[in-house]
Length: 496
Ligand SMILES: Nc1ncnc2c1ncn2[C@@H]1O[C@H](COP(=O)(O)OP(=O)(O)OP(=O)(O)O)[C@@H](O)[C@H]1O
Image (cartoon, rainbow, N blue to C red; front, side, top):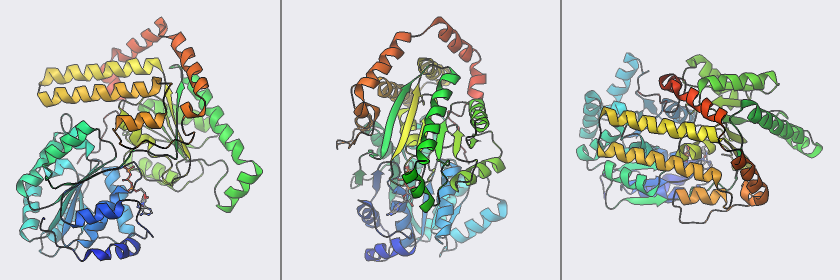
């Protein structure tokens, strides 16, 4: 058992109510929290919206000392920090945007011997800096280093091997502080990625391992086979959303909505689009058709980002749909998102699952639609190969090669998810993440709902195949690779 000083564990129900203002633990949260409080390393894998954050935040509140939380995205950190501050938990972050005097105040407190701060959120990049490592040593020397947490731990394996190497450097935690427990939390890791995380982070043999099913039974998964033509998708989507609005006008539903003070026309949703230009175009078209939509992508000014996010979170008229690149994803925790649409095929299975997982976080029925076009598939396949070739040119290493293989596999499995017409979509997701339990699907996918309709749609799609004009469009798209990459947020991350 590691050297963790905590107040007696029977306080956790009280802390849950008093600090986190929740009535009861969800299934298995108690077990995970008790495992963490026992001082052992913990690996936690659970579905999107399971409530993983509380599993490390609650121990951080009751343990003595500071818990260091490594998070891959500034937006993700800020969401958690704001929620913790609302609950009066002393929490801080040091990142690239932290002002000098603010940084000094946080450092002085952290190494004073009896820090006020309970949780310090940082990026992996910061953890590689010498001065930050010295700060950790100093906190440790005072006996005030409680735990390391790596949130979204799949990034250690998926990003660490190529474009964010500092994730790999997190192995420093165990090397330098073998007595300090580590918790890794993620929603998306295959068996290979799990093994990689455990190896890189040097998690203990006595590790408490929790791998819950990835299943989200309240999500209805659907794939719509379309061509790359914008208008074809747009007409389909517009028709669909207008039907939803019309249904909400029905007497019984209207009464319900009036009771809960929800706007009839205000269905909260997210549409993921690959390029920033594509986001702008789609949002503009929606607004012109009277649908409240705002964009969110890496090149948007901070003020606009804040405004669009705040308006969407508070269900302000005109802010119903966020049209976003992947810059908007992990950590978005709005409970009443009723739909997530992927305008194009995402580049990985994990990305798809994470983004779709923003829907229905209140447990109510919500829909995840993916528009699948052959052109998108071929374009992404070529992009992955171009990236692979570029990486090989720079410097080849076994890790890098393995990771490119991982990317290919993940993308190919997502293509299979789209093209399969003989299996439940929940089951395909469960198979990908190697869940042990069979997922529940109560008519909550297009296959369960109407397999013959799905098969007919796929047949029509196959019959079209790849026309010469489609091939030409793909070639044009790829012609200026740099331009294409510059306009997409495929790997956009707000680093330190
Ligand atoms: N015991 C609980 N009772 C009620 N609500 C809870 C409980 N635990 C967590 N929640 C709420 O569930 C929501 C999802 O939690 P959280 O953001 O931690 O999910 P997550 O597992 O990290 O999901 P993701 O991987 O999708 O980000 C939050 O709004 C949180 O406040």
